[in-house]
Image 1 (tube, rainbow, N blue to C red):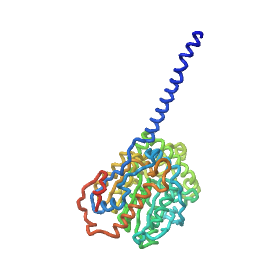
Image 2 (cartoon, rainbow, N blue to C red):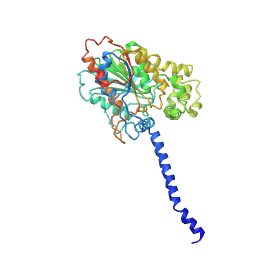
Image 3 (cartoon, rainbow, N blue to C red):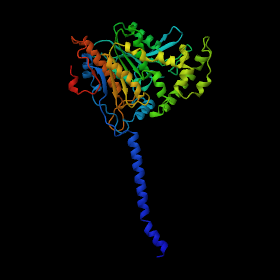
Image 4 (cartoon, helix red, strand yellow):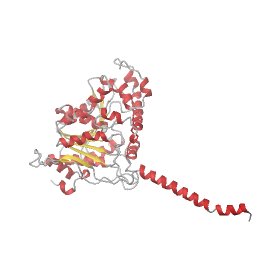
Length: 437
């Protein structure tokens, strides 16, 4: 054997070992990244609750166990707020049903035409009462979205009539009849829908439900005028941000990829606006003036679109004024009906600094419960064992469970319902036994 062959024979056994070590290191790195990105080490827990210790709140928390039990998302991906949000955005819901409804058209004073879909209950309500859920979807959403269809079908089966607002301009097959579309906090169309329900069903009581942007609209609507709260049993708001002005700066940050989500949402808004370009910007006797569409085509954020287009629908002089006047933070303290505010700590769209608004409100007002889950993303809240989520989400169950509890309270009001006994503020997860009435 020559020296070269000897060297090869002594080095060759070490090479596979070295490559095996590199493979193991690569696998370990990938697994570490997966564990970090999927947040697999994060614990599961019941929602963190802030509320005043009143008879009503104790009854609601006892009667709606989803608010006090551990929320368990799908094991492999459910602890990632990004994946929960992405799955909601792409899929909406799993095995989405197709509830049958009737579309209603309501002419507005300014020439616009509001539309909503009306779904009758699929049986009697457990209390025997006539209850209607008036529902406001998220930004650019409508009654045909999968998450709305899933929730409506679930509520119908529990005996609720459902009225779902279609945001002005959101339905691709419905033309605008005036040079205006939905905005962040315009309550006109929602008010028209609620008015129709009250006139058509004089015996019905209302449950108000808002998702994301819809949560801002319904809370603003209720707080704008005390008359808007008549015949309203309660309100549930899920995943809203409460103040567009405060959210503005956080939406430009790359933390939690909010800047990227901002870009995606702006791109969707551009598509909706441009699909109605003829109604909004031309071919109408009344047209928006002083409008340059150039910034719309180049916009990469919602703020740019709001400043160049959306604020002008209602004549706001600046973006700051638009955000100030359309945010529910200035109205929500006027809401006196029972109010459930739900957010997720890993929602990539709602910065944690915005959550001081509902937390402070719940600490000050006895009619408010603020529920903050560890996981759920933005309007995700999927449940499931390991990989595949269930058709119904934690969010669906909480809203209907809370509504059922409110109906039961109204039906069986205890003698102390008007008093606020022991109104201490609670801001933690209470043991189940401490929630007894």
